[in-house]
Structure formats: structure tokens, C-alpha cells
Image 1 (cartoon, helix red, strand yellow):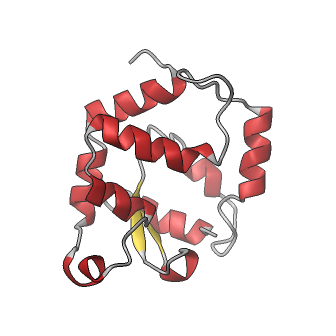
Image 2: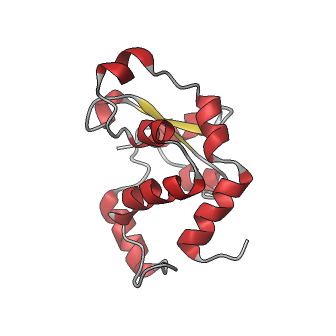
Length: 149
């Protein structure tokens, strides 16, 4: 579970990067996830008045929110479901030219080899910069929400 404290820490650094601790990850790899204000336009509203050790959001809560606030998908029929997010990120990352190493680092996917644990190191600034170029963000959101940017 990602906590309010972790999210608060992410908002107080530049670039905006959320650290997922090893104990929170399926394969026990600490990694970072870039955040952008386009996705979370009023981040303080989400954490104001909440305890730093409180869970930022729950999977069940996200499912309920999405059922009350459906997000129509532009390329397929139906609404966005939490189970779709990882697959969407993987597919769209390929489309926008986000390389596999950066994508796998953010998703903590396929990174348990000696190559990753001993040789591959990513600077947060570079992962953030590559993912959140204006063109990449706009294409990513346009493909998800059918927003004409």
C-alpha cells in the first residue's frame, strides 16, 4: 500500500517521483514511479488532513470510484478497470517510444536478474524526463480518454 506520507514526499521533490519501497513490491524491488500534475491536478486535495501512515487509495476503492465515474475507452468498448492499467501502460509505452528498460523499471517487471540488480541504474530525472515529454503525455492521454489535445 502506498501511503499518504510517500505521496507527500513525492510532491516535495523535483522531479515528482513516488518511491515504492521494496516491502511494497511483489518482487521486493524498490523503484520509482514518475508523477505528473496532468494526471493529478490537485494533489494536495487528495492528502490534506490525512495521516501520513494512511493508505493513499485502496484497490477496492478505486474499483468503486471507477464504477461510479466510468472512464470510456476510445479504442475498445467498455470502461476503464483497475486491471487494465498495467496492460495499458505497457502497450502505450511501446506506442510513444518509451523504451523497455524504463518501462520495466517503473512497473517493476522483469527486473530481478543480476543485470538489473548489479548493472542497470536509473537516475530519476532521466526516467521522468523521457516519460513526461509533452508529446508522450498528450499521445498517452489522447489514446486513453479520447481527448483532442
